[in-house]
Length: 363
Image (cartoon, rainbow, N blue to C red; front, side, top):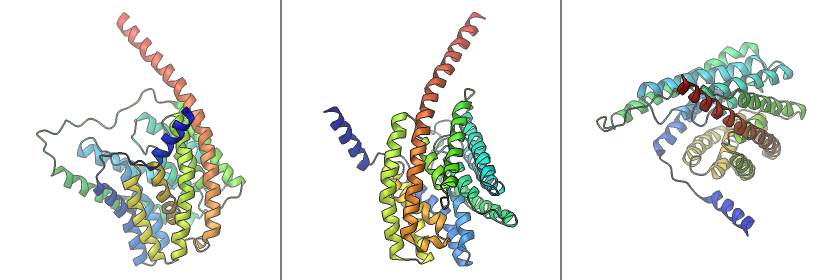
C-alpha cells in the first residue's frame, strides 16, 4: 500500500498550490521588465532587438527579499553585470562547436562556484547559464556582438531603474522602528564545494555537446533543461523536478501549439509573452509543475518569435520536446551524481569544522 500512497501524494502535489509571501506586485514588475523591451522593439519595427533586450528582464528575479536597500540594489547590479558577462561569453565563443562546448562548461563551472561561495538564494546560477546557453548557440557574427551586448545592457539598465523605484516605494511603507535590522546578503561560504561546481560544468558541457552531436536546431534547450533539473536540493527533489518538468513541458508544448495555431501575429505573440511571464511569476513559487506548463511556451516565444520556425508549429513542438526530454534525462543523471557529491562534501566539511573547533579549544 505504501507505493499507492506515494503515487497519491505525488499526484496531489501536482495540483496543490503552496502558500507564499511573494507579492503580486513583484510578478507585475517582472512582466514589465520583460515586456517593455518587446513593446519598444515593436514600435521601432525591430522585434529581434526587443527579444534580446527582454532576456535581461529576468535579472529582476535576483532582487533579494532581505537586506538593506543598498544591499538589494548592489545585488541586482552585480547580477546585471553577470548577465552581460554571460551573454558576452556566449557571443565570443560561438565560432566553433568544440570551443563553445569547452567555454560553456568552464563558464558554468565558474559561475556555479561563485554562487556557492556567496550562498546566493534561488534561482542561483540558472539564469546565468540560461543566458549563456542562448547566446552561445546563436550564429557567430563578430560585427553584431557590440550591438547585441548593448541591447542586453539597455534592458538591464531599464530593469535596474524599475527595481530601484520599486524598492524606494516599498521603503516608504516600512515602519523602521519595528523593522528588524537587515542582515548582510553577501555571506561567504568558505566551504564552497569545488567538486559540485566541476560536476555542474561537466554536465553543462556534455548537454551542449549532445545538442551539437544530434544536430539539434537551437540546442541550448538541452543544457537549459539539464540546468533546471540539477537545481534540485536533494535526490528526491531532482527526480521530482525531472518528472514535473517532462510532464509540464508536454502540457506546455500543447498550450504553445494551441497559441501558435490561433495567431502568427508578432504583436499577439508579444502580448502572450507578457501575460505568460506574469502567470509564471505568480505560480512558480506555488507549484513548479503547473508553472512549467506556462514556462515552456514563454521560453519558446522569447527565443523563437523572430525565427522562421515559429510559422511551422508542428515541427517546432516536436523539436523542442525532444530537446527538453534529452536535457531533463541528462540533468537527472547529473543531479544523482551531484547529490552523492553533496553528501560526501557535507561530511568532509563537517569533520573539518569539528576538528578546527577542537584545535581551537586545545590552544
